[in-house]
Length: 474
Image 1 (cartoon, helix red, strand yellow):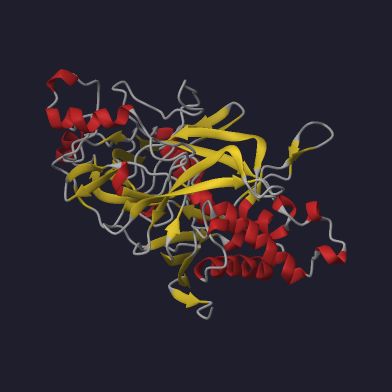
Image 2 (cartoon, rainbow, N blue to C red):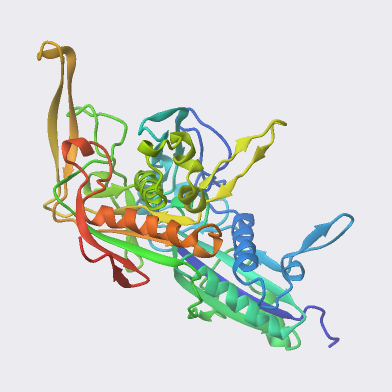
């Protein structure tokens, strides 16, 4: 048998689980939302292989630039008329049903079991997240209201990855790629800095083949093209830990009493209700939905803005920028504040030629909190009325109410990652201002959510940095 070109194949099947809701936008709008999720021929969410490949290459180039791999050779490149195809082949990530079976290819829904139909019928109405851009005065910016569809937390996907190689030593690259995917900081999709796209690896199956051996060549030829991580040749792969490269903060919090993160909508009981969201929960290899009424949700976007604003306050305090000293308010708040710009980034601004400049991606990664609420956590309706400050009486038509969440027994863990290596200007004071803002949350000095002037959103707890408690004294 003649020697085969590219005789080495390294293959893996990876099952991922979304530990926060996931955004894989299609770029389309619908009558219900400004941003629709990608769906396949069966009307179910999927993750394009190009998305996974792009994230993987970016992670390698950003965090392992000096490790010695030729990323152009491995991932392909185009330079003018010259180029090379990718040796890394990644399939679309297909959704798993309630029993952990991959749904690949066009399906005959009529042949599905009732349980599978019921499970996937839930995906016909995905959650829609409401967003509003908040200015430094705590109010929405004109034109800053939008919404988008998200994929349920707990949804599982499976994809296959293959490396075509002439060199057996490239196995180390392939295994490093699997380790990156399994790492705590690997995330997928849009708005990963704002609470979405955090994943965990459920299983990784692995196989390496050398086509110089006929039995291994035949094994490869007889493998189905459909995604099937139960291929008999696969064996379990245990990922190795890789250097995070990021600082991990954890706010371990307990609400003092009521919290209120608004849905932006009312119901038959209240004009404004707490946001809740259905999600998928796995018990072993069986999945079921936790209904929205049984969930507690703290969107990372609601936390991020408050912490950014307080970070600006502490940074200005450290730098002695006070209104009494004639500081220009617009120059020390928002993206014009060095700490906010360094940590949370900026969309930039238009120059005289109409081009955007000074754009910066944020280096702080937040995660949503979405969990089953405890039996002692319950809704409470509060009635409010606007008062005429001149007469002291009520204003006609100004009676309204809100549905707040009594969550005194809940344990809330907010995980926050910071890439300190990207902070180049005044790093020590930037990090100190950020940590002081986080400490204010656990000390009850920075309430989170809505209705904070009415006593909502106050927490107590502790703050850790890479596992060590900091700012332990109130």
